[in-house]
Image 1: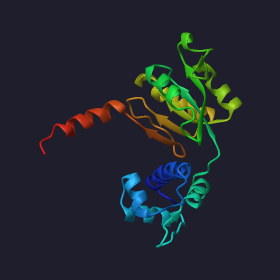
Image 2: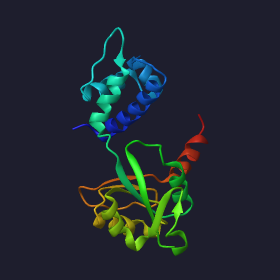
Image 3: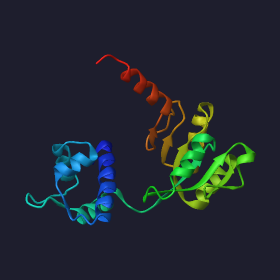
Image 4: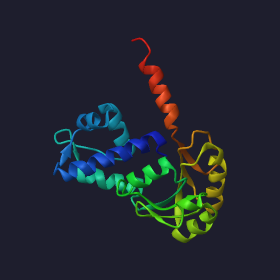
Amino acid sequence: MISAKTIERLFLYRRLMTDLIKRDTRFVFSHELANMSQSSPAQVRRDLMTAGITGSSSRGYDVVNLKSRFDEILHSSVQKAALVGIGNLGRAILSYFPHRSPAVEIVAAFDSDSSKTDRIIHGIRTYAVDNLDQVVHQTDVSLGIITTPKDAAQTTADSMIVAGIRGILNFAPVPVRVPAGIFIESLDLTTSLEKLAYFSRRPH
């Protein structure tokens, strides 16, 4: 089984291949891909070998073939996502995300505030959070994004799981507990900035 860290790098490599194809680049060497991905040539070669990909010592890796292989491994069919929490961060994600990822499409957003629901925000229909289960089943949603206040994060995750969502991206500044078989990725922007501030002011 390919590790989560390797999968994360493969997604990055795939985005880089897409850019190279747009620039009509036919081949890429491991050291060039390492430079683009801020990695090392040895790490790139290990990742590609893990994915069953080999290159030529004289020409490097075929860019189109790399992209196709990444698509096979990463399952390029679109998965649908629902966002809960239409505050400033939620709106920013709804504004930024469309057309950014070929693999994920946000199809619905939810909130407990009725003034934010039953409307279209950045092209995405919004619903009362009480309708989460129904809409998830109707739209075949498999991924959830939490941008609620921290007090609502756990109950939101619980509701997503009951509705059948199996992958959750949590932006709320609080840990969320999920049962085995549910994949969760937590991104605490405040803590990340505080950590950055701490290390940036330490003496060199």
